Length: 302
Image (cartoon, rainbow, N blue to C red; front, top):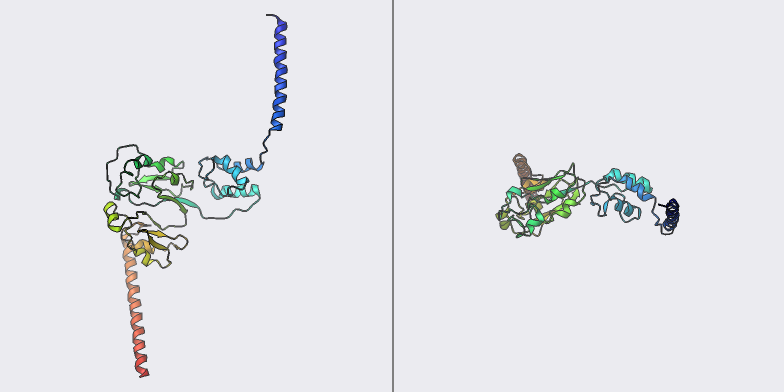
């Protein structure tokens, strides 16, 4: 092989490399897309879970959205208040304080809900829904097949006694279980709210009792007992107005089906009934005394 040809080939490649490098450098300058220098700083404040719970495509997407004003400073449910505080410092803004959110499953059926069929298909709620709306006789409740469990990246939800239960200590309110549940019985709620009606069955009481021993029958006992107008039976099922609820738990003690959480013990129910009896007796005595006083005054006027 002629050495001169080798040298020419190397020289040509070297010159081509220099030319292409110059062209690429010029193109990079001409077609450069300006990136806000705050975006990578905000990205460093995020946990990097890339769970999508914020509604954006990963932490990079959320960082860009926060800087551009399309998402709030506290938009990361996983990072929580700590991440929001760091981001606020980067952007030089204040972050609004708010209650921690957790997922809650509005069903207490599980093993107490009757099966209408022996389901032997895929252990997936969405798959089971395609077969006569699931194996449970209650068409509203949890099927207990664990699609929410598989969707949770934080091991914060499990199937217990046939129904999904949330571990609030682990829950980061990413919302994955909420979007995964085909029955739409999982929602995000404030952690400080402790009273929940764990039933969404809108059927009439007798129909509910046929399919679940723990279902709400719309008896309105809770509605009549609440002193804060915080619970009402709507479309056949009790619903709580969390803006009015004071966590007094009085409604839980009168529910005959035990579908309002936290479910009281029998001792707590007995004490509550005793208290109600004493209050009723006191009210009756007061009314009787007022009646006697009115009769006495009427007699004096004669």
